Length: 336
Image (tube, rainbow, N blue to C red):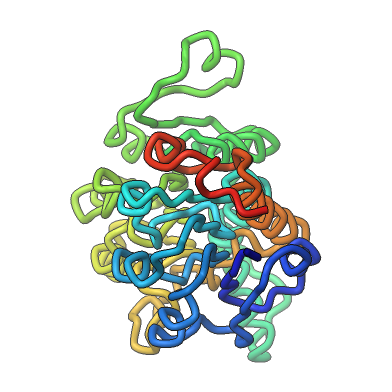
């Protein structure tokens, strides 16, 4: 039997189109996420799904698809998938953790620079035709990045890529992570390990690079924001739920910290009445960390290969739940 696959967007990548060479594919044609009713209807008789981070493959969705063998997400994050339940049901889950490392680090460091030098404010100042004095010593003062202190929360692949970029600005680099590197590696990289609280107290810029877990949800809360320097800037290009957004709004309004720069939010897309939109001391972009042609193409290739590999009875290159093999071996899901 030919595998039946649901792909939740019509994506302009050859790797996605190639799935149709060996499978019967149903695409959602719109740019936005399919509605829940449509999503469950199209998933019901499918052997596999290729989804995006906005598609919720929860217990209800998994139970609605008794033939489901593989869930492949075109993302590094996987909080939109009930991985534990999928594993218990013998469903393989693939993801794309490597494809967006450099693109996300580029964006995070861009946010740091933009917030430090108030680039968006300057752009708006120009477009509003307000520049009337050629030069003034106190005009539009920002914050120096060169030789300042960067605190990295989460020294995984993206955290290390952020570190590499910071080296070009001769920054002092602090990090915190559940798993500390060896002293030898810290010396080789030129970084210093700190507790989270000490990192927050000492850093001029704090950049968050952790996944959402029970331990990291609202990791940056009111108490921790108050530990930061009044001159410090917070950067978040990881997941919105790692920062208590209501507390951050208060921190920006009341000047506990100097500013923030965000690519991610607790609710996406943000509501029109989100108070962040009215604050001048925050740089906001719409979750574009992986938005380069190169990164998105690689993400699509990885997602497609993960899906097809499982259906061929082969271990996918990026398997999130290898323990599923003990529940349902690959030989039992092979269809190609």
